[in-house]
Image (cartoon, rainbow, N blue to C red; front, side, top):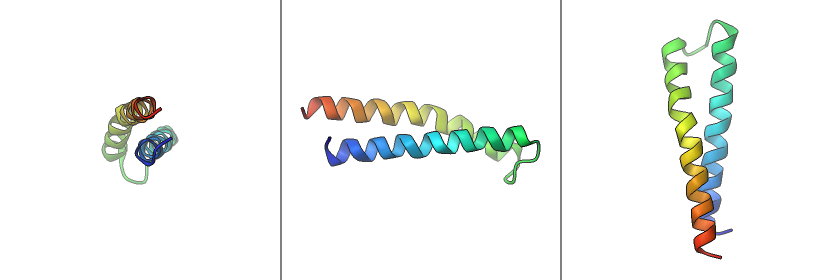
Length: 64
């Protein structure tokens, strides 16, 4: 693993944690940041998780 792919993987993990946290906040009924902000975080983090993970795998395979 290169440092670049490690950073991409770290970004993927952070985005996934934010997405799961947003799901729990929305399911609680009263999110601390409001429904629209929490929904926007969720909507942004789901594709970011996949994009960062794909970039990490692509970078690691390129540097094998």
